[in-house]
Image 1 (tube, rainbow, N blue to C red):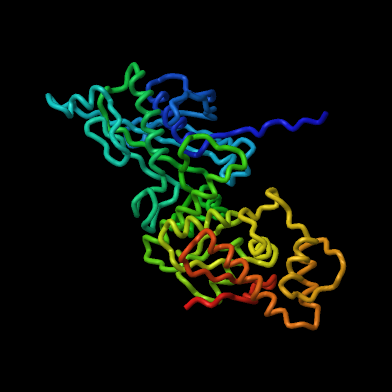
Image 2 (image 1 turned 135 degrees about the horizontal axis):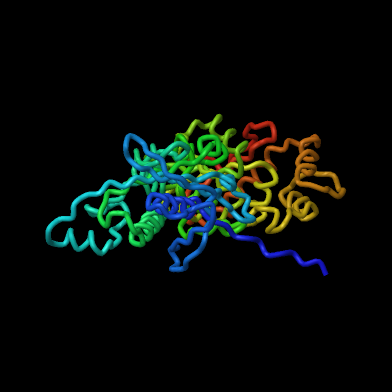
Length: 392
């Protein structure tokens, strides 16, 4: 019997940054810190080992700086950051303990303050280095002007740093710890992501809510959809455009010229995206897709990826016929072949395309009661062939 092995999980960029940070601090304390595994705490309370590829210490302007890097292993997930080198550079500047009071209590116990608020002394400063993006638009978990290192990764980095500091033989018990996270070729990797749409420029984001990458998980895509809508709300957009792909997005943008922040790539997560648009308060929702995806939506398919069920050409042809489509009475192998057959008939295809869009809009309305919805059928030449119903 041929048995498929289970998909292997991996680690997020945030977990990699935390492991690299701990290794860099251990180097500053003169301990062996790589290459080899480093154990760090995770948000679920468990401890896991991450392999550190290299670590070293150097003197910069008279200050010792520890460096360590982790090569991200995303497991079997098709993550564009898989194989990226996440680097932590750490310097520690001793500061005197306050004589009395709560500040001294915090400094001695090392209690973790809320993310974004560090209690001096024992202050942690996290910076974004080369290859880590900077937030330029409101609506994200990180303020404008700050490095794109999300709150949970920040907390993981600080917890890992505190572990190294507490176990140190030579390190000061109270200090300002400056941690700079960098990503080798991060700017180039970011070009394969949707960061530019979210207003993150200059590199990738350091992400992760659990520290673990689940193979083929929908959570990361859904999180990107939600973040895109957060930005759209924060920048004052009144309409949201959900596109099935890059070609559909470009066609709508070229034709309607809505603000860039209004465009969110829903991919195959149709039902989730429409529901999320309503949750974000959007009363005007545009859906842009090419024929195969739009036909699936019109046929009431909530998740349009092929792994959730390929479009049955025979059922699609029958559906088109119920809408009055004049198509040859023969089998079709693909949705594209069916589309070409419609265009080759002598009948004007616009009434049929309008009905397809109307059916898709009606299905979308089942997830967005009260919202005004317009579906835009995008031709394979990159133009919009039909938009219906008309939004007022």
